[in-house]
Length: 272
Image 1 (cartoon, helix red, strand yellow):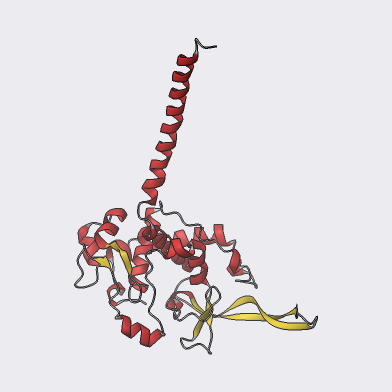
Image 2: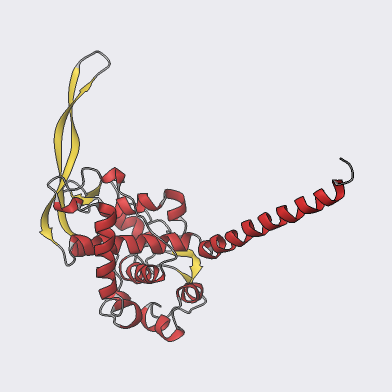
């Protein structure tokens, strides 16, 4: 949920990156979604949506950190990530960290924990919201992207919303003010029963927008991609350095193999 700390903030993550977020979202939506939002069947192919994130895109990860603090930290924790580590990896100066990200009373050396008591969340939602430190590794980036993009209005749900990726989810659609409201349109599809009887069942067909949000479809798509990118970074903060080091390791092994072959040829030249 959105926290008080994330409201009305300017500075490093709340204002300076806002224009870049919109531009990034437009490029991402055009390249990865293929303009599906503009078609009548928006959402029909939701299972093929890909996050296409890149943790080496530092601006995207920074925007994702802003998004997480503003909309997710009220319920979800990152219990394996410290504020100081986040600031170091994302290049956030200490002054801006305290001004734009740190909740009141928290210290940079502390882990990123929600202020919501577990007992309250259990009473309000029926279950405690999960920690998201390793969610990107456990579920995958595409799962998170599809989850945040497939909320729809469901009057039968306790929260008034449901989700295609995780049906009957206890999480409310906290990003509805950004995305707007949409309903799921179903169609009748024929199926077969064990007794060779033809059955009819409802199958999801597409989404229909019923109320606009503060962001356009392209901007919201960019918002979600940045958030997923940040969660991907949190799941393994060293992955960018690991991949860069891996290139040098492979090059070293290739050179070492060549040197070993030269030594072997020198030792065996008189045998043949």
